[in-house]
Length: 154
Ligand code: SF4
Image 1 (tube, rainbow, N blue to C red):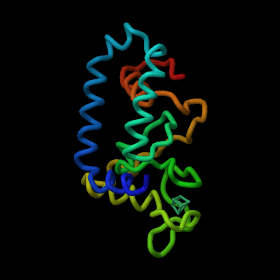
Image 2 (tube, protein in one colour):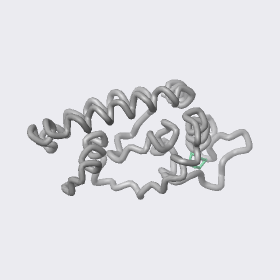
Image 3 (cartoon, rainbow, N blue to C red):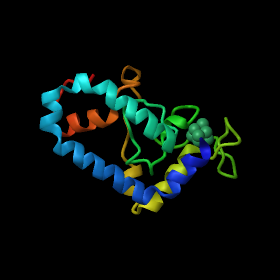
């Protein structure tokens, strides 16, 4: 829902703190998660993420979450699925050239990044192209495995 998505961006500062806190908790739980088996846990975590991030951010469950770097705005809401900044068609009022009733995802991303503070440090992170094989998998568990140096990504 767009109104919730915009609310989340305008509250990006504390939402990102919650997000970072969750990340820290999951990182601390790595030994337990590893023991239980990341593969076995993935569908459960993905289901929770779909509900929570779907409600707050209109997340499309791409499995490669960028919310922490994009001002708590999900770039997958861009009709062109651009993950590294806007196309050349942003309207003069800041709305999307494809969906005139929607503020361009990258305008909201910039606003969210400003709300968090020091926007250049996060929004300039180059995001990898979306890997469709990861759609519907847990981005949270993937972030933990990445931080812990695990290589079995899919
Ligand atoms: S205007 Fe923004 S949201 Fe719309 S297609 Fe271009 S980059 Fe994506």
